[in-house]
Length: 297
Image 1: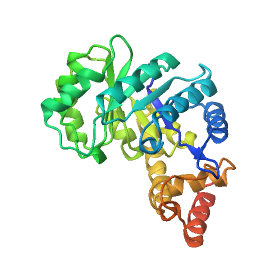
Image 2 (image 1 turned 30 degrees about the horizontal axis):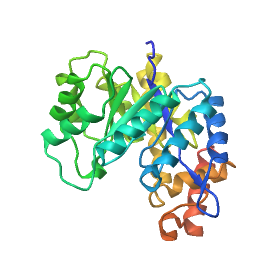
Image 3 (image 1 turned 90 degrees about the vertical axis):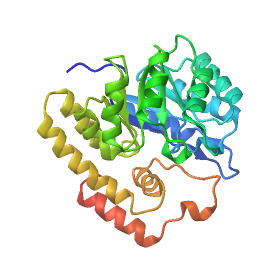
């Protein structure tokens, strides 16, 4: 089975901060080299794991520049736009196009409850013409899009090539695939838990957090699938779920950050309260022992 651009396993790279809370791109560059060395299919930034809602507009542009420069054309790069303001969203889309990302991804607005028509109008305003674009359905925004809404947007814009889904609703995903007109429309899982289920119902892969510290764990699923080995893909999915469950014993993304630290690729700092990134010694010991048992460190 032949892969297209953004098929397979894509890693969502985090950001790091200096002690003064300014962005630190050293860890990003180091992680990109690690990802490419391990065969990752693509890179993504600008979502929740990137803490994009804590960055200024200029910092978001800089993140896109640094990621593209680090990737240097070796793997495709997708940058996400997560803005409530139509003006800011359009500006960031243009910034990423100017930088030369391989595709832009656009999330729905948050905070205010949007009607279906309002969501359609938002995307109609923000989606660029003739540039590869993906839609990202983020339930944390409080404006989860229905399959009909996503299909209305995609069918009205031929350059909308696909959809990142974080709803974890396989039934809704199948409904969407029945409604989109493009037979090559790329549905991408936004959760590692749905990598194989996504592929099984006609999706193309995953944008993953687990693949940041452990790219080969997720690549084992998608590579097996694209090599016509569904049994191998199922075994790899089960193993990835063990890894995911272990990392999630710490709150938020902290288990993933700690795994990166154990691999000598730390992503330090935050602009959130200290408690949001705190891990107990017991949590660290539990995760480290589990990763050692699985022979990942």
